[in-house]
Image 1 (cartoon, rainbow, N blue to C red):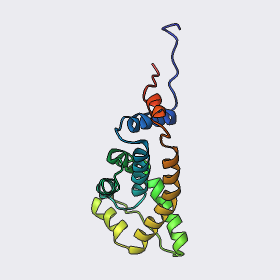
Image 2 (image 1 turned 45 degrees about the vertical axis):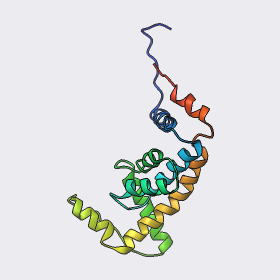
Image 3 (image 1 turned 180 degrees about the horizontal axis):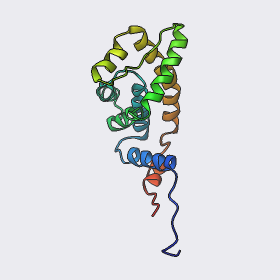
Image 4 (image 1 turned 135 degrees about the horizontal axis):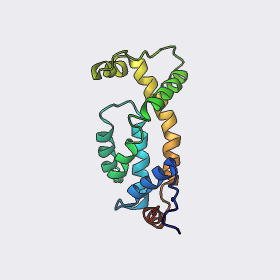
Length: 164
């Protein structure tokens, strides 16, 4: 190959998937513990428990003897970039399931105190977010559990990928 020929890098989603499998593949635990910890972390990430998700994931994964690092990785898939979209959809789904007409008005000026009050000040909003998050999160978590590393060799293969 000519050194001047540009090498195409894989797309964003493929790179993200490879990074995820590399991180999960480097965890020292049984594949089932890794997959279950990751799925549990993602499920906890779908809840509106702002500021407590990682602690809950660490506690539950310890009690259930699952991979704690994988649970934390799972929690962070609902983050500041993906969270607004996910939680907006979760609110709509939860509101439809509850059959309520509640609305959520986002504060004009973003302050941590106002955001906290918006989520926790109205029990119906919190319930809609939690229910919608769980309704969407449970099937996704099951999918993640079933597709995360059926064997150690697959994890090793992903961690050895080199694009340069």
